Length: 495
Ligand SMILES: Cc1cc2nc3c(=O)[nH]c(=O)nc-3n(C[C@H](O)[C@H](O)[C@H](O)COP(=O)(O)OP(=O)(O)OC[C@H]3O[C@@H](n4cnc5c(N)ncnc54)[C@H](O)[C@@H]3O)c2cc1C
Image 1 (cartoon, protein in one colour):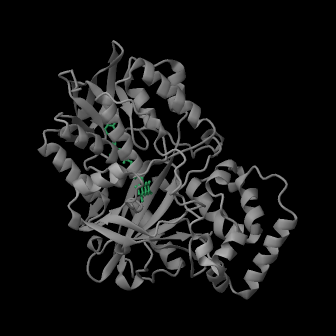
Image 2: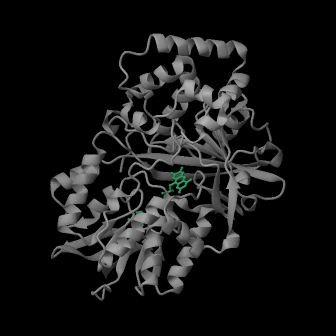
Image 3: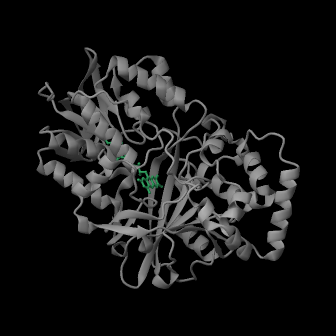
């Protein structure tokens, strides 16, 4: 079934979700219109280019269990542009590198005999006197590792990533997702490495990566979309979707200070759900708007610092558990791809997890670069004078925030769309307020395009109960968190 209407499919966002939809539509002979608010494509998966340095927002591994997505990657990008990269990421704590997931022998060696014995006693104590209430994540972890190891390897990093005390996080998400982790298993893993390796589904040892970073995939994809008759408008923010006669009929966007209204046969949206609901005209019922306003986000910023190659480390990234610095993770872009860095130097991406509008978010770029430099030196990862230059990138809404009400809120919005405007299709990460990676975001777009042509997929089942994420407190899995309005005043995301 071709799209009956003369009007194009309008796509909000040129990230992985939006561009996948556009690419697949052009393959079916359609001429979609892609509106991208930013000046560049790729969304959160873009590669930032500054003075010839290329870096990710975080680091974007390409791995998937979805065959259609895997084939799409290789259809879009020529084989020679994809590299297979080894994955290494360790915990950096008190000047030492700890394997992740923790390996007993390596941890013992690093901790030293005295601290290891203390951790052992602390673990035994927790086994004999387990915390009475295991419903919060702190007690859940303490029971499995003891207080001492919990404080060293879980508490600080988890709190840096999510911005709430671990003791306020419910444990049930962890019980489902991190089910195979405890100290006894970690020790067995060390003694009999083969035995537990398949049981702990936390690591992907190798991943694919485009030579020039993930943005390369999306830049090439955008070119292909345009070559096949699609239109891409950058600097174009979709601000209004007119809904009448049972569906979306037109969209309005602003670009360069001018407003344009164009007809739409379907709207595929990767814009944040909250923004989508507010764009709909006339406004949906009050409970739908309230549900949208009650969706929250964790935001993120990265400080990329250019340092001598001698400061490089083999890890793609390291987790920073030290309590005396704010940085949560440090990416080494030279380890991701030699094509991202220049001779004799590497670029380290210091990652800070923040709330939009908080003190760190509002710091001037020079101050953030100075803070990053100071913290790198304090950690012993650089010396005075090593940092040649720095760049700051802020990423609002990097993580959909999973609190106790998010599911009900998403459901309310979804039901309204299904009944009142079924030709609006939320896809992707913020589009569905779901902790989707690139592959999930692409897959939701792929299924949506098939639906537009008559299929009946339930796009919302993508990335439900997937097992291959990293588990534990790595920041790549999403715990359920206390409500954002319970957070201290002044830290709420404003928009
Ligand atoms: C720190 C970090 C690390 C990650 N690591 C990985 C990884 O290793 N592997 C992996 O596969 N995934 C990773 N991800 C996830 C990945 O970034 C996302 O899954 C993916 O980018 C989502 O694609 P999307 O198209 O749904 O949304 P986005 O990438 O968010 O793109 C949405 C686009 O829509 C645009 N937009 C928003 N509102 C409007 C509007 N009103 N009008 C027009 N345009 C609009 C935005 O500017 C943006 O370009 C990571 C994410 C983060 C935050």
